[in-house]
Length: 390
Image (cartoon, rainbow, N blue to C red):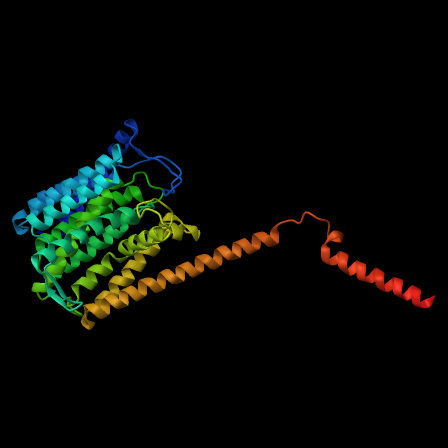
């Protein structure tokens, strides 16, 4: 089967279903409301885009993919349904953060313990190869929950989460194609098509948001694809033409590095300020981009291009080993974040200094203190001259 078929089908299914979904959301008053703490949009926008994405993706997968090639597809689907329903409920009536975490852990345990989708081998990263079963389960659950929340938190401006998800889907589609994994290739193409159909309506100014149902589901699929790719490259020779995959964990990290780094960064800042790590704020990377005067579209484009830079770096330097490559990626992201922080600080400082210079004075020019002193000294000199003459 041609791999573009699931892409085109899910694209059309999502793109055509969103307009009626927007109408229903407006009638039922299912909106994402503006708020002061984190959300930066100024108008009410329907937030049920995740329903269209999940439906189109699932329909495409069921129509075009032989699920027997994905031996654990039922467990992946069960975990996905738990994530999706939790997100959809949060979009409609709201869900307590603790309950959302419990649902994410349940989904992660379903897919790792029942579906056996878990990290089996780290390919020598930190000197670790084959993982024991308990360590494999624990690491995989943490990875899934972490990636799910990372994509949920990065969904803050028009087009960003969908664009990063589309890039992830296309890169993994190519990698699974090179690895000879048609089932996973078609899953990636179906996801890419669904996100493309959604982005048609989500590019700024957005007509609809993906909501938690979309961002949580996107993070879940990203986590499953990342784990599956790491396992595939650990046991199969994946020739990319110009190189072969020898540092799969580092490459997987590069593909999702921005959501992961942004989440760890804001959590660390909040904890350092004695705040809850889940307290909403405007300190995410996309908020910082907007503070520089970039539009939603430009901020999204910059962050996608930066992600592309990390992916290209990870591909080019596959042969140096996972430890060294992960180190390079960490140094790169810290360096870029430091440059951004310095630029934002210098820009804010310049604005403050300019405001001080432009601020009108409340006293007359002839009453300035320095001028009073000079005038007084001149008067004293004149008096001394008169006395000496007398």
